Image (cartoon, rainbow, N blue to C red; front, side, top):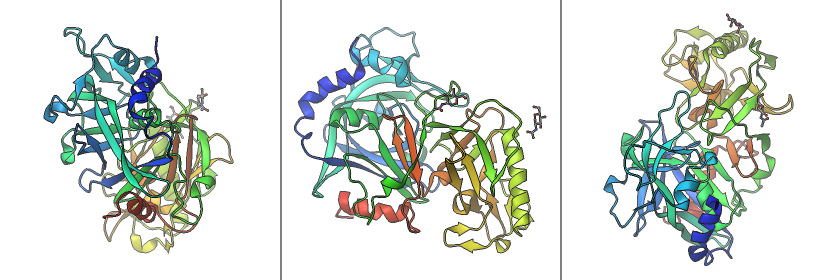
Length: 413
Ligand SMILES: *[C@@H]1O[C@H](CO)[C@@H](O)[C@H](O)[C@H]1NC(C)=O
Ligand SMILES: *[C@@H]1O[C@H](CO)[C@@H](O)[C@H](O)[C@H]1NC(C)=O
């Protein structure tokens, strides 16, 4: 059976050869929707490559589009007896043949749902999808894939919220956007993401990516292997967690069951399963009190809040207890500092920005938007590893990184 990559390569041989000789960087600028707290990406779609806004789903398996507004010229349904249908719904892809019952003419698909996620139903189609690109000399273009595989949704969660027309899956699947772009343009199967409180940028391609900064910051990342778990979608980005420390002190978590951390753009703040949250929140409050932080009544959705006047400020945010997620060894830690842990709710309360996720959470810890912001992330799904680190050696955040890409990709802005 032909694999999807062979299939995509076949499609690609007509469109991609023209471009493949030049180095290019694909650039996807993101905006953060202030009401939904979702990151919104703009891609181009259809015969005239019209802009379409999509909510980013970091671990999502595919591009889900509300095709009801698409003309028949912009998407063509993929027949159920086709290599594309077979390949897109094979085990590794994160899509399932589903929502069956109708005649077998279309390729009915369903997204894999995690313990808490809802499955979305649709039909597989193909159409042109493009993103902005810039070549080594700074010349702009769009990188278009003419026969991009799209899941046309019947009904999918989150559609219409904030005016988006669907969701953009960036997950570890054969038909996520980074995966189809990598196949089409012969680039490495990885992308960098840098999110901030108001915007963000995703880049992929040959690099160098950060040459507009003085140093190649991508060289200073820490790496941890990507893991998989039955409880989440196979396209999700997960890493194994061995322990959690607060100000260097290990939490006593009494379960020996495997623990994992999921990275998600679907939730604005981190969540932990109840048994871990209760130990974590108590330890954090204790460490904060030892630092002179004064508790105030909780402000929903958070439970642990402090008087902002009792929290000192540093150049990189509030001076709060340091949280370390200890990964594959004691040496490999994801540090969550005050700017990522604390959320300023009002002049009266600044809160620990982590919520009790109950018992149904699909991972022990889910890092949400606030914790992923101002971290440079490398999603190396080809190499099954995640890189993370500060966006620069100085005190720059991701919003300081973005203008360099703006000027590369959008000189007119
Ligand atoms: C993650 O942990 C699980 C369970 O302990 C283990 O089976 C798996 O190999 C680990 N994955 C990685 C990438 O270390
Ligand atoms: C340990 O597990 C028991 C039973 O599951 C639970 O009642 C207890 O609260 C747990 N203790 C901690 C510190 O997590």
